[in-house]
Amino acid sequence: MHVRLTRRRAFEASHRYWLDDLSPEENQRLFGKTTSPYGHGHNYVCEATVGGPLDERTGMAINVKELDAALAATLAPLDHRFLNEELPALAGRNPTTEVLATLVRDDLATRVAAQPVEVEQVRLYETEELWADADGGDEVSLTRVYGFSAAHRLHSPALTEDENRALFGKCNNPHGHGHDYRLEVTVRGSVAPHTGMVVDLARLDAVVHEQLVDRWDHRHLNHEVPELSGVNPTSENVVVAAWQLLAPHVGPARLEKLVLWETPKSAFEYRGPPRPGKGR
Image (cartoon, rainbow, N blue to C red):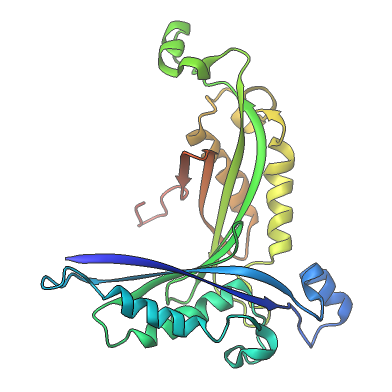
């Protein structure tokens, strides 16, 4: 019987993005305001997920106190530190979220190696709108959150007026209604040794805004968004349309998944069409 356990712990640290082999102008163009020599800081949140067999005697996969102690020991060298100068494990590497998540995951794995569990994933939140997932493989996932405000009316051309009203209720209001949509864009790939990034974050921001946010924000999805023309703009259809817009443009990383929050209670996830030889 395999079970998973996730524990969360926070730490506070500062860091700076800078590559010595680039000119100040090149660093500024690549990393923007994060190049300040004095650094900037975050309230990092780390979620560590371990998994293993259930011990029938204790009813646990691992003693939570032991996991907490291991996680605390892993994060202690990072807490209240300027990571570029005070974390030897970085050895001159850029302290990106992707790099830090990998370091934390690998260190924690050594600390629980004697336990009957494995570290399946470490998720490191730099902010509530940016986080990285490291699972011990050759690739890391990076998630960035974007928002747009739009109106829509749930109305299917395949149904009669009465059927639409019965199925969609007040969401079938002819004048439409609106949401502040939250879109989580997750890309996955190898961490570039030089930059420490899976993807150029400034470029990803530009792609998402150019391809989607700037075109959908403050629009009526039924009438003003070509990708949804003639389509009932349910959040299921909206997230699929978003994938079709973004997937060709996020390289060299690949789009791993999109999560669209229509409201704080409703989220819709899409991982793209099945790839040849692989299911979903």
